[in-house]
Image 1 (tube, protein in one colour):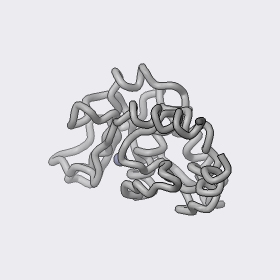
Image 2 (image 1 turned 30 degrees about the vertical axis):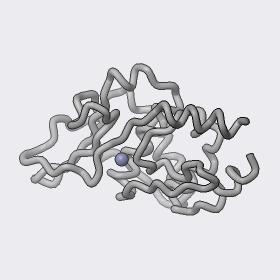
Image 3 (image 1 turned 180 degrees about the vertical axis):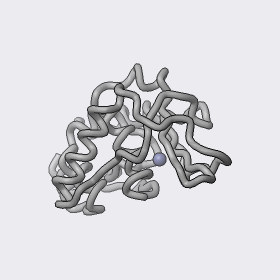
Amino acid sequence: MKTIMTMLLVATFIISCGYPAKIVNGTRKYNSTDSSFSSYVAAFESTGSSLTGQTVSASKIPINFGEPSKREWAGEYISYSDGTSEIIIRKSKWDTYSEYDKRELIFHELGHAVLKREHDDTKYNNQPTSLMSTNHFNGSYYKQYQQGLDRELFLKDKGVINSLIAGS
Ligand SMILES: [Zn+2]
């Protein structure tokens, strides 16, 4: 029953993002990150550093509110012809998000920008196994499986997430 409820919640949050990154002529709009995102960036860096045993830094990727290229996108990672890049987040979506939805979106976009990960729609028992899923799943799913999903993001190790799904 819990699984069915989770799947229903997942199905109502179909928000994709743009990747591979669009290459735009010129340079990025922003040089620093809006403070709205600071705690999520810090969580990405500390979680990544802890899991990998190496310094994970997102300081070169500014994150700010704006208009992603497609209306259904909550976020977009954009690369520019001068070699800079940035992440743009749709505020009207962000303002409706729970803490874990916000964390999921920022970890996903930084997964593209910092970890150079592509989308991964691999399922286990019909459940998403990666924060790099094309579609945004409900933050409550992330909260339930955080340990496995964080590990999968930074280490590409699906062992923990798969066993958590199998045990639920
Ligand atoms: Zn994406």
